[in-house]
Length: 205
Image 1 (cartoon, rainbow, N blue to C red):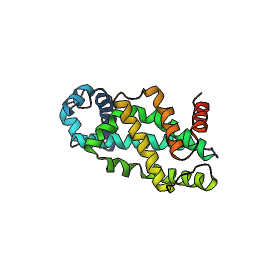
Image 2: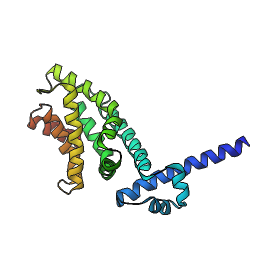
Image 3: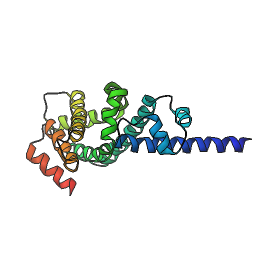
Image 4: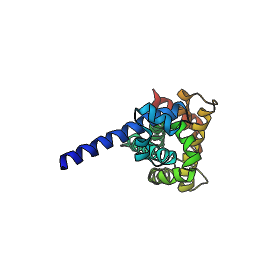
């Protein structure tokens, strides 16, 4: 009985993962994709999708949670072992963009259902790390800003969101956006534009 229960659980988990993977692909292709479309694409009946996610908002919220986990991991990997605050910020933004670019449409979509406050809440651990990194850079004179580190972290976060929207709206080429984001975040923190551009170019090569 226990083996059967375990089998059912693992099958349900596999179904859930498959639905999430397919849903992400469908929503990136068609932001208005319905639960019916997602069920058909996943090869399951609609009841199965609703068994895991009570509504479309819950499904999108779960996808956003996964996106935030990926962003947090990329942010950590980008700054890992880097002593210079400017380089750490640049590397983390470049790493985050590689992940965030995949979720651009999803973030825009989530703003309709999860709300920006919900997204900000999910990003709190990443922002807290950014605050400490920016605070250290300000104390060491690497950064220069009239803003305190917590406010500067919000500017950094919103800059990345704004550039994601710019790519979505066709105002910026996605292949340039990661470098643009890193340079913009550094200059917002007071790094001279020439130095920011040079540093990001070095890290991108």
